[in-house]
Length: 334
Ligand SMILES: [Zn+2]
Image (cartoon, rainbow, N blue to C red; front, top):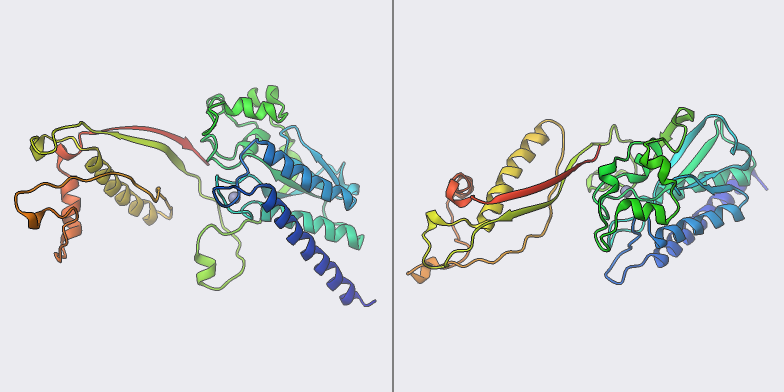
């Protein structure tokens, strides 16, 4: 068998393994509401990690859980290496998320190990592949919780945040799956960071840019940190829909409109400084438009006025439209 024939065989076997893994994990975490849901620190997440572990072990790799209950995989000869290159990503998803977000980075690392195992040639430097759990912020609010636990930076305040569905704390959920909470609460790193030579994470692009320039892959120059306002509540004041004059209204919807315009202004400013921002894509409210003339009652005035956008911005400036209180809680995610 020629060398190139052998390597083609390995490549096609690896491709089949990747397909099988993606398909099986998609089935394990399929959400009746659509997409995949692998909640942070859930039984589904644990089952997926154990499934990956069994595939790694069947192929002769070393695969074990670290004190943060993340799955770690290596070539058997590298288990006790003093220093290593860390490769990996997360396997949890947002609710109704995509199957390959995060998972692709874990599978890619695993395939590198399987490739070297089959060829019988090691890496120039020892490699560990980590499948992290609990990185998505959608379940508790705080993000990157597994990484923070590993590095001893998960705060008490973050540990007390509650799950979006069952209202139990992050601390309780982490304890449930067997994370060493005494160390986490004490802020003790769960891994010796000094032994990590480099960290490499393959991740699918979350935006449309690479597709638009027809490139399959790129190297990112940095990961942006962010401040997240998880719940913004605008509270107005109910008033008779016909009898309260415009200037006396404290309309929550109008306050939201102004808030969004101001956010859009800050977004532009942030972009000018090389950053990015995003907002929720859905907004629910109702509108009641009253006027004596039927021609003025359309809820959205159709206007050919080129200054319409300026008009909206000006309207946002009227104080009487925005006497709404905004209760804001944010998380630093860098
Ligand atoms: Zn991700």
